[in-house]
Image 1 (cartoon, rainbow over the protein chains, first blue to last red):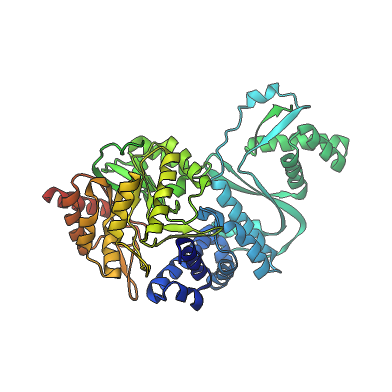
Image 2 (cartoon, each protein chain N blue to C red; image 1 turned 30 degrees about the vertical axis):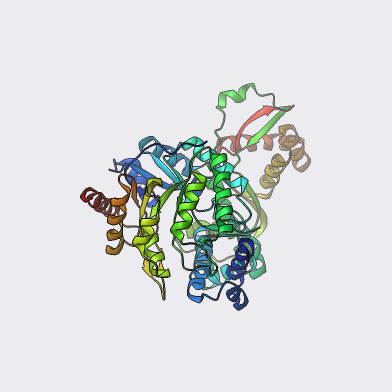
Length: 250
Length: 274
């Protein structure tokens, strides 16, 4: 057995823990068990660390069962363990198909983890914006921004869990909204927004031009209200550093 | 042609986030710190910011766990580029990783898996070290791992493999004394023979750590103080090596910093007796 075959057999052992794989590796059961335990404990620990509030929400037993399902179906592939929690969201949708609160809590924690180590970015000084030609300006979003639709009170649940207070019962929102996660300096932020603001930000993510944002809001709210709302959003996004600045389009 | 890492000797600690405040707000009496490279191979945010502040106060060694030096398919170029970016920014004292593998195709075990001590594996490991040193523009330190499994077709001992690897690649070595102790116990070899077989002149850094007793094997758990047997082995090692960089590596059940500094004092005292 050459090196590549031996490593393939080892991979099979870690993922499947099958007798066949153990035999191929010489059936050194005690040693193989240590590696098997290390592999699984590492991944379970990674998910526990990434989703502390989701774990509290589900309870240890249900969280562990979901973790094991994820580890069995999705062996890690990236060089960094930071990437492993990303796929947990999809597994939770399978394991808890009728619990959008669980999916949205997972999204919140995953997005916060990503924002924590996203690229650094500093907002331009306010006085620099005075010279911007807004008709041709392209808005620059912070690289840490993550957006997602919200259908439940997951934001309130997560906030209560984070503050270690009694979380509310999970309920569906009367109107769907949105979730924003980003980082200001070194502090990650979470904000619940209305669906219109989510759609507006998604629009900016797709086509950064401020003029197109105005057109989008005018189409939704009418001429006057749309332009006013665009100005309000712009001021709020600049103030919270969701937008770093604006540059002229090419 | 790469040159050796500049001469350095002293006593340090593995820096863990539980002790960030101690290192940022007080004057911790260490000669260097070591960090896990992958924890800082990120785009930005607080981890890189803290590392820059620490670097302004102490020499920093970068210690990796994911290079996968023993991979049959070579190294991941993307990983190497990320590591190089960190190396270029931090200008570390040393860059090290383990004589182990973790990557096979589209799979990464995130563990330090054992390398079979064969001629074929030696060729592959040497090619991978050459690749890493070429990209990084530095001489790597390669650490002996703890292992729990021996390859039935091995054609040489671990120390013979390491000596050949260092000779062929020019790499330097990180001697983990606890790993020697654990592997010697698990595989039934003589730890002193291991030390005698190491090319002492290539060893630039020493790790000291604690281990735990598993069902049948010793486990390299880094969750308790250095035990008497490892201190004894360290005394033998340091007599062979002379002045090098020595550090305590603790990852779990982290005690207050003062306890780790006390262990470091023991390391200093034992070295002074040699």
